[in-house]
Image (cartoon, rainbow, N blue to C red; front, side, top):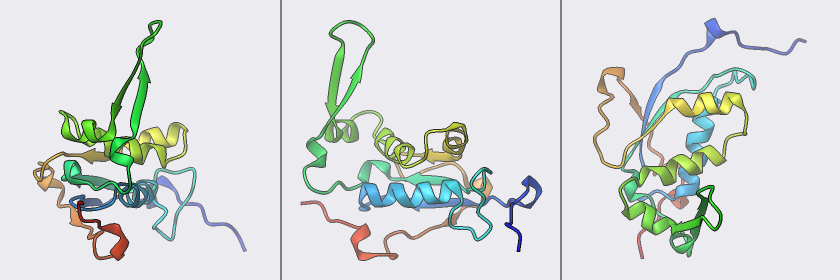
Length: 154
């Protein structure tokens, strides 16, 4: 018996829309990362870009459990004493709330060249409009998959 390896001619990519309103961030990121890598397909090949194109809408309405909204995110400017921080809640309420979802998905992918190329197939929008209607994306209902995927705001 031989191991199956997909060729670039056999790879079929779909477009998928996921509505992130009320969905827990970590659960959303793991589902999106699985779709980007293509691990949901029976013909998954680890060294090929098998994944689908994923569109995430309503990224500003994603839910965080526990005290994660108050968790600081640090970065360094490159200058001495240039460490800065902003909480996850401030980022979600700020100008670019989609960066929280992008960072969560990026950290669930392996850190190599292939995953950086797979991240280009992810589009995250803060609002409900995405402008990708020409690709005829299918809707993936993440809320109905598991009752733990959704969380009401407290």
